[in-house]
Image 1: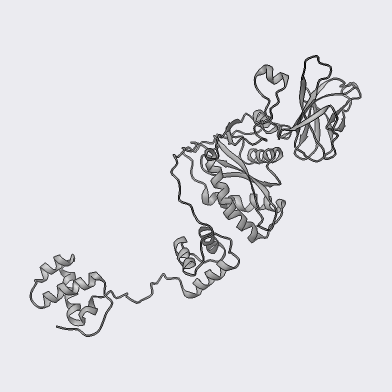
Image 2: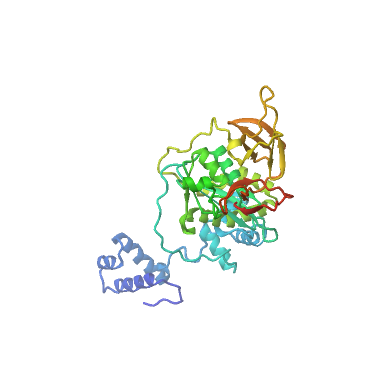
Length: 432
């Protein structure tokens, strides 16, 4: 028996042809052939009939050469390539597939999209390094038990725009991006604004895990007399705010220790830059609005997970004066003319009850995040001052000339305006 023509057959179909040829020649019973082919007897009868009628071509699968019904059409493929080289050029494969489904109503899997782009010669956005082996740290069991925060300087508005810093806080329990905001630099003011957003949106967390940035942990070598006597140093401005809110500070000893927040920044530098470019946003004010209203909900929908316990460890800030807590603090002594001077900025204190004066009184001067000033005496606000520019406090050491102790000095935090004086008997060591 011979058959004319050439056919593209698989090894399995070719083997079936050899077995069925022996059946037709009477060399092998069909029951034994069914066992050799791994099919039922009824299927073996169908294969034998097809092979007898059509020859080897009868064993070839009927879908050979047909386009699958779920195949991406050529027009859709060309549309995807056009968008990949045009409006969505800055998106990675997963991000691109999400935007195709959301904005263009083109639903394709990441793997299908990857095959289309690679076949067209479009490389991945960035190469992925092989992952190193690290021991996994278990997540916190409930939300609010521990947050991780940090700042990331980057060209967030694109390569043609200057660097700015994105401040972000991540809940360790479920990976939720609790709050984020853009600032010019990673400063004390930036951390206080980030803390304000966290407390207002979610509440007061139990612990915050952080690095040893100078705004968070003091790095200057100077100890005041009071600190030497107590054996403990006063915290930074951010540290004092965290202490007043009852938040425990945990400092990381290596970049790998806070790897979760670093990975979030890695994802944000990939996605957020692209989305800001698509939205045409190039200012910090517009970017912060876009973050809170648009980006954070969508980001958390994709990347946050379910915590182990549904219980939340966030505490309510009800009853707390957040405006006073989240501010810069300057301890001062009132002069004889009932004024305090903060870095050369005079603040006139209004008369108290019964036209009382406050000369020689120790007061707490605060500059709030809106730039305004308040003076507190015995936990009561006794005067307020209009806004002035927010600057990082400087830690000054003033030599005590009246002391007989060699090298004695007293230390204080001082507001430093742009045109601040520099007395000859004062030298500054920047703390923040």
